Length: 92
Image (cartoon, rainbow, N blue to C red; front, side):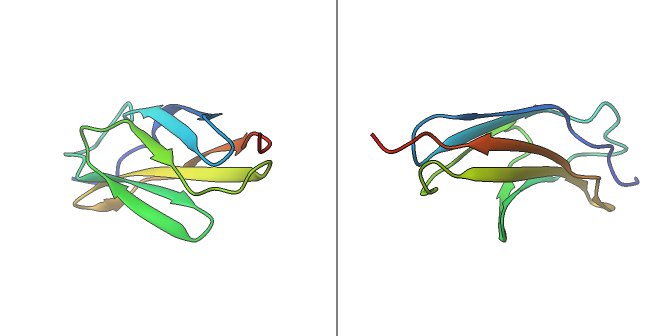
C-alpha cells in the first residue's frame, strides 16, 4: 500500500447562510484501501467514512468565504488535498 491520489471532482455549494455541502469522487488510484477521508475547514478536521463522498459543514458564519480541504487516507497515510471555496449565503 502507498498513499492514495487526490480525490476527484470536488464541489462545494452553500446550502444556507450557515451550512455548506462538499461532495467529491474517490481517487482514481486508491493505492490500497481507503480508510477514511479527512475533511478540513479552517483548523477543524473531521474524519468521514470511506463509503461517504459528501459532508455538510454546519455552524458557519453567514456571508463568509470558506476553503474546504479533502484528503483521502489509506493505512500508508494521507494523499494530497483538494480544495474548493464557497461563500455562505447572506442571513435572511
